[in-house]
Image (cartoon, rainbow, N blue to C red):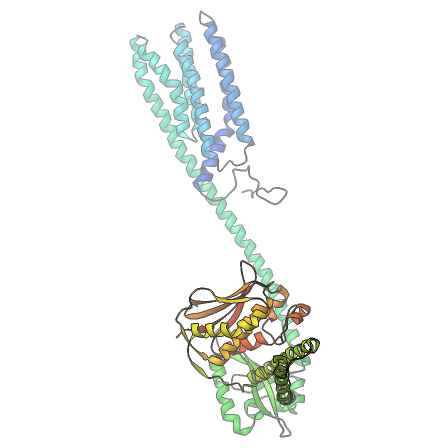
Amino acid sequence: MTPPSTTAEGNPAPARISLRQSADPRYVLADRVEQLYSQMPTAVIATLVISVVAAYELRQGRYAEIVIFWGVLVLMLTFARAGLYWSYRRTRDKVGEAAQWLRWLGISALAAGATWGFAGAVFFPSHADEQQVFLAFLLAVLVGGGIPIYAVSWPVYALYAGGILFPFTYVLATFGNKLFVEIALIVPAFYLLNVGIAYRLNRVFNSGYRLRHAYGKLTEDYTALNQRLEQQLIELEEARRQVEASGRKLALFAERSPIAVFEFDPEGRILNMNPAAETLFGFSSREMLGRAGTETLFPSDASGDIAERWRQLIRSREPIFGLRLNNTRRDGAEITCEWSLTPLVNTESRVISVIVQGRDITQQLEAERMKQEFTSTLSHELRTPLTSIIGSLQLINSGVLGDIDKDVLELTTIAERNGQRLLDLINDILDVEKIESGKLTLFPETLLLGELLDESLALNRGFADRFKVRLATAGEPQAVTVSADRKRLLQIMTNLLSNAAKFSPEGSTVTVNMDIVDGCVRVGVNDNGPGIPESFRNRIFGRFAQADMSYTRQKGGTGLGLAICKRLIEMMGGKIGFSDRDSGGTTFWFELPKL
């Protein structure tokens, strides 16, 4: 079986009907049509030769003009059939258009048969007995010879033979000779016999084509299977080499890693440890191998809790990350380590070992504690005098102390505004410090969210007026209740509304909408600003995150507002995010569980 041919671009050649696609009836039909057209040149040449012989034999007599006419008709039909054959050979989609080509071939066969039927009907009554015998013999040969030519499609053969015999039968039946009438009765039986033979051959051909396609498909499947198996063997060999290389890399990584790496068995005994673990705990690997690490590396009073945690890890077979525990060094000193535990599970879901990685974070925790104390102390010490300064400036700017010069008023206004920005920054830093240290306490209560949104709009309209931006709600707020800290939720809305007002163009409107999404209520703040740069999206909720620094400094802001909003919303059991608006700008939204 030959494989499918391909073009120079690697695509399957479209003109090959013998493609072993499948036993699909379309391909069987295409093969039948291919067989019929492949025999067409033989049929055309044989018909032309027989026509020349017949014309020569029948040329005498007073019907010479009709013989010439019939000869011209045969030539025209010969050229038409040759053109049909040439067109078929040039077509590309022989499978999709097979039925159409079969119809054209049927018409061609009917025309060829009718041409000979015309010859029989016209020439048989007008010639002598010996010429009549010759003509009858010739027509019988043509009918019989059509079987091997057209038997692949018995309907085509039926058209061809019918075109020859039906006119001839009519002439015999109306000739007036009793013998010819009897012969006319036999001719239909002869026709049906030949059609029956063509039908049986048609079925045999169909079975052969289907078997050929099925065998071709089986061969292709077998070849493809062998190729897949060969490819899988290559991939397995490559995977084996990669596993070996990975094993060597992991061993080297564990040996050179700056953090402590242990391998424990499911019972908690140490199977292996790297040099960093020896340095961290003061034990050599020779001393530790085979010992129960869950008892050796932890304080004795915590051994029971550690053993229970270990059993739970083995049962769940789930990795643990960021586990902070107090550990004991060989010299008795206690240190705090952050551990990651990864069970190695085989195909039978059984833990074969546990990789434990740890690093000493004692100094890191002390540095964080000192930083938090410094930040908290500094912020409190700055906030007290700064509040007094801002209050004094507000008294001056309000005119309580009398009229002041315009230039002085401009300077004191700038001082008040920047003092307020500094106070906002200090308050934001204190909020972040409280959230990260776990000292921030929320006081949740049942709130009507629509009323809170109206209140937040009223509180921030004065701020929006400074940027000539209007605040409004989109539609009538729904009567939805949530459980949240009222003060902190107002703080979140203030941050979102102030950002939207600062970054929206003058004269625009910032809208707030509320929707129900999957059992939660979603609040969206829609601005008309320039949008969020692609490079900034993944860190927009980080601390001190600002996109275009030159632009945001003109608008003001600490870069802490969105980070605080994210942490507060998550503490209330919700989530926060943003999306682009079709009309331009950005929608910042948060969701809270609906009561």
